[in-house]
Image 1 (cartoon, helix red, strand yellow):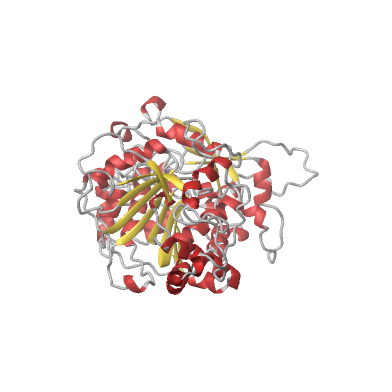
Image 2: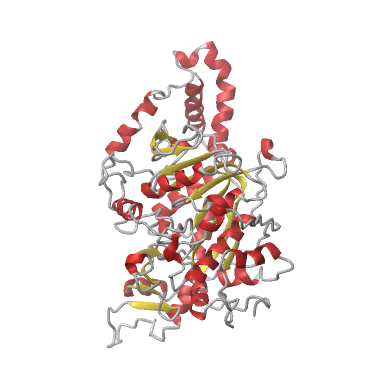
Length: 560
């Protein structure tokens, strides 16, 4: 099938005839915004950002990113905490995040080796999916001051890597009012800042890059109700850097990571990275709650990730006994390996994980929460024979399945509604008509998606089916109540001390003191309005009176 100018290998694309417990909503459900694809292939930044390497096989953010996931989340050691400090070894609290930071910040890839990859066109196709996702966005946020149609977008780019998506965002038909990129790799963020300097004029008027791990860090919002100060995060801002700067970008600790308490975003993009939040439910809930707090009502989170439905189907097609009967004498602890694209892409599951996935349960039974998280696999991708040139083999990179039911469950609790979940093959089929989607169709050529035969190899096409594109919409405020526990280290508490000291512990408004002054009483209604705006109107209405007073006091102290 396919248009006359692109005929991918014949293959029935279906993600519906799979393990019942893993079914997604109709992949065609939800309304897509009218295409407004601002394709301008003469833009150097956009073309150069087209491809990513390795683990997620996406274009994620830049031509030099070896994983396609922006190195935003830990690749090992999830749950092991470290002391946060300014030393290179202990910068990140999570040991896995620190390992990812060290590895990817020092990794160099070149455009010269990009075409040497055996999976060049597949990675270009994955980049095309992401680019069309961005181009089709047209969120209608429900804020009085932003009802004007076509107002420039406020974008939060998570797992931004080296900032390769800046070009794509800058070409959006609505333009960009504010762009904030967050990543775990400090080296990548420096490259991103250098890229942003070249777009200083009208393309990206406001641009900020922040180093954070959103499985633990919370930019722009109070990490817990008991804290008055915003977490300080390493941040660089285009607005504060002198025009004409040419040296290494200078990152400094800024409260909120450059995001203010009342800042909101129209779009939050998480490309080839959300599966790194699924190692456990605590990290997943922290992530979704943070996303919801930072997103305006009516705004859209978008993401791409491994399609768990297809992975389950591939496991079922291995021809192995997945019943795990106790009487099976041939039972071993050998891992289960899914091979796709002629073996170029491999996902290895330990037996214990497969047992959890295929545990016997009644159709009426709901899936136990613990069986939707921590479904770890290791990812191997062969892109070429010369690893030193940047196209070799990436081995044993841990990821976690992101089942559609789990994402729906998290989204619902966070006030988000899943509008679309389309496998990459379905995504293409919905846009393959060159007349209806002429801009996206032309981009297939401009982004080097097609080979010399006007197609994609069978192996590359097979691997691309392993991914899914998802779009959410915020319909209400988050109802999640997080227990901060011991997520903050002693060093982090000291780090926030300067901010907290500016706002002493709140006193009851009725007590004598500065809060009972005539000035404070006059400003009280405005402080309450600000507190309600920060917390969210729906969640505010659910709060007890004492908690409303406390939050109002926090805002009042800032105003005084």
